[in-house]
Length: 226
Image (cartoon, rainbow, N blue to C red):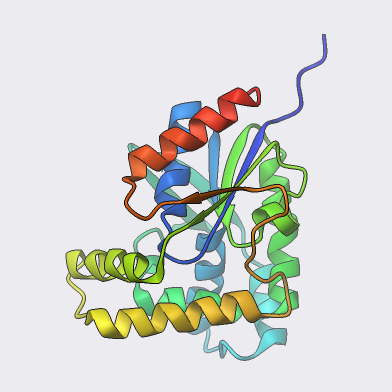
């Protein structure tokens, strides 16, 4: 008896739409692997910065990305992201690294280097993967595609709160401007711009708790055979 094909859930959306938190909750509920592709771009930005490579140097960034080995594993309830054996889970969550991730993601060589790794990781079993081009580019054949969104004011509120809780100095107005700029960069880039797949289920998370949003995605996945 042949095994059914692996079930993939692709979750896309802009910054602070809740996709990372929701994807983690969905993966735990379904007992699926979870791949945070945003963390991969953050890793490229971080490692490039450490090596003195400019976030505007597409050729060198492509070489950095091509040489990284990624490993995702659960450490209790937290997801650990290891690159070349080093746990960088905390270091990549800074606001500047997040901006760097958006910057390095502009370059086709970076995206090409990470695309193969993302698809390879998805072929190891049932998976939830989130990012900005999962349903459109990375896993176009995913059994379930979801596009999470929330209005800019709500996303800025969430990001501001996260920064304050981490002890970072932040002003709401500045966070709002930076998110708007990041949206424009992510949606306007030539390489794999952020957009919903034609067959994606759209879910507005404004006013929803992460648990509520995750429950809706889990229900959709189970309705499709997960």
